[in-house]
Image 1 (cartoon, rainbow, N blue to C red):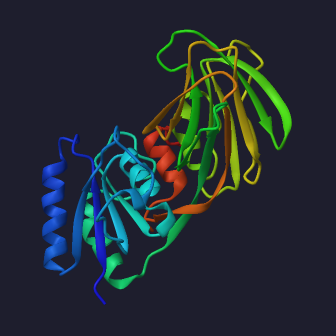
Image 2 (cartoon, helix red, strand yellow):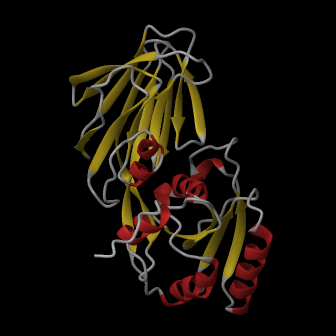
Amino acid sequence: MSKLVAVVYNPSKPELRQVLDKLSNLLDSEEVDFFLIKTEFFNFSATFESHEGLKKPDFVICVGGDGTILYAARLFAKLGVPIAGIDVGKLGFLMHFSVDDIPKVISFIKSGNYECEQRMMLDIVANFESGKTFSSIALNEVVVSRGKYHRLINICVEVDGEKLINYRADGVIVATPTGSTAYSLSAFGPILIPTADNMVITPICPHSLSARSVVIDGNSVVKLYVKHTEPTAQVVVDGQEYLEVSEDTEVIVRKSPYFAKIVKNPDISFFKILRKKLKWAEDSI
């Protein structure tokens, strides 16, 4: 039975046309049916059902950087389809294949002989005082931040119903293990193994020398409250979806029942990716 492949691409990448042409030609030559989806990071709805006429693929190939895989993982989250990333970005921890690996990815599609990593995703719900609610899903992280206003905000963090801390900071990140090498890492958060069953809470520029990241159980429920903040703060989901929130809005974060299935490249490991992407020096001893 023929497999249907969705090719999700980031049109802003300068090398894109050449890579897409190569990929399309090889898919055609192998008689693999496919269709193209252009990322629209600033007009995103994280539900497959909201995209009218979108077909259900058997396999997803992303061409771009990590943001392209985040887009695809959120779009196809409920379908459980495998996702392989072709790297034409800058610092991709999720893009496990190079342009030269395209024939390998196509052979995976035809043979079905490949392995996937199950990556934790987050369900996010924001409850407003008016009774309005907002929900979304993330592969990397959810951020509650000061947004466009240049002042600290106060964020109360609860874990499983118990108060953890009140942060006075630029914001707070709640990240998955996958997201631990993204925004949380740049805010001096720890690196987690991507298949770990944990979340990490990382403050952004906290006004305290003692404020540190906290790693919690993956089954915990995190609640964030913005306190004494005017006029608004902002909730950002995977850097792709933005929501303004006011004081006392409740943001609830928990592990999603859905996972991102990231196709593994058998020739690389997570530690090898870390050494390459973070430019860790090789030890000569």
